[in-house]
Length: 329
Image (cartoon, rainbow, N blue to C red; front, side, top):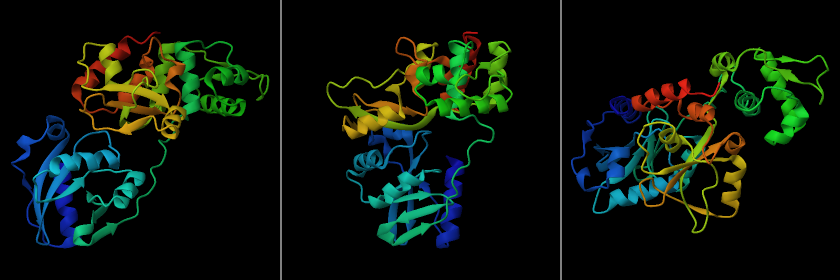
């Protein structure tokens, strides 16, 4: 939090000149716990206007509709102009925030304060893919080999099992072979080609782990419409608590594929939610179908580990190390 505030003060000073110090807001005690847990609240006087900064400290980025709801809860009885502050915001969400005229600041990158006539935008370079990281389809092939079978792997059979085209599977084979994780048969590069993983599964995981990425593409807090069942296996902290002694989160975490997310949106089967509301759940949208490797309604332990590997919570990290020791080699 201190780092974000320091970057914010520097950014305001560099763009707007002299800026009075940011001070803590002492009236947050009346707010619901989930708001106090997610945000730090601070006051700032800028161009004669009083601003109430909502500094988001969550690792998960909420959509603009949820942010608007949260602001409405904070706004009750307050005269200050509410401003959303987050260290990183995706390009899509920045666009939606501007469209909805929600004031926000990304320290060092963008400031949108329409009531003050301030709209500073800078170029955001597109994030580069992780160097050497496997594609989602290649990662799915590897997890299949680790969890189910590493024998008789050819593009045609795997395309049917994993839901990809034969061409996509052939490219995934190329990636795995180029990464020296397996060897290909000498029967060519067509549908009769087969892969062979020659090292023990535990060694294969150790060698491959630096090339693996989180399967989670996005996270969305939602309310499912009445009668709708969760659209996939349980994942995230809900699944980690199931596989360990970690306490369950206050909300359900469910994993679904990009196809599932698209279907939910097309059928309008959900509404935006705020985590902490009754019945709210966190939907993780995965780059490959989580049900491919799920068992008994829970995501597989390898993908679960990868989905939470970058979490900074020390308790989660300790639990993940315990989870690794129980991998089914």
